[in-house]
Length: 232
Image 1 (cartoon, helix red, strand yellow):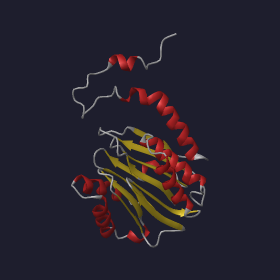
Image 2 (spheres, one colour):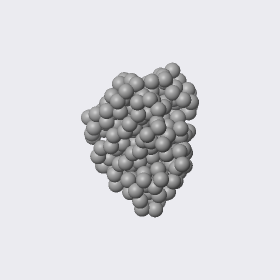
Image 3 (cartoon, rainbow, N blue to C red):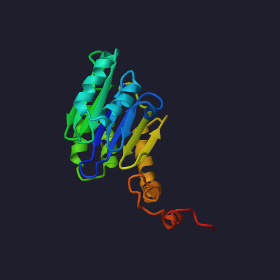
Image 4 (cartoon, rainbow, N blue to C red):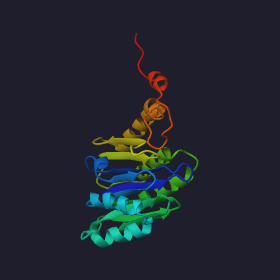
């Protein structure tokens, strides 16, 4: 019922997920990411604890494949589940239960995993992988959005369109990017629009936020003020 890409940037270490589905609020249920740990998309009769527990397993030192195997083994509904994992080193693994619905499947590559179920067909997944690999050198969020666009153009969810999300973490405990399209007739296109707004309006101020990792970074009041609306 969903198509997604989960990935790590080899240059920056960013981790993230882009996902879309014909269901409300996919961003609240499917993507899970933790800076310097990993990223997981859990889908197909969603079990959120795959994301929650999976990040804990990665944080404890498991690699993506080991976490996948444990998560599948301990889930009584594994035959209906689908999930993809990328760990802090960029190792990717994915799982698709044999009772997932419609066309379903997954692919893994260097630093990424794509997965989908109840799709129009296999090209949704293969085109996502192709698009992601074709834009090496771009920032991870941009690559994720391009992959999602390619998946939608290749068919996407066979039931239609409703929601999409982009979640990316970098060095902090809070997300670098957290964009959600909860209910829209063309959610991937709307996600592209929001990503453009983010780059214009939010990206310039992200470096002004308090940092747990860069503890010596001074509070940048000047940097904040220059992005505030000016009085008439």
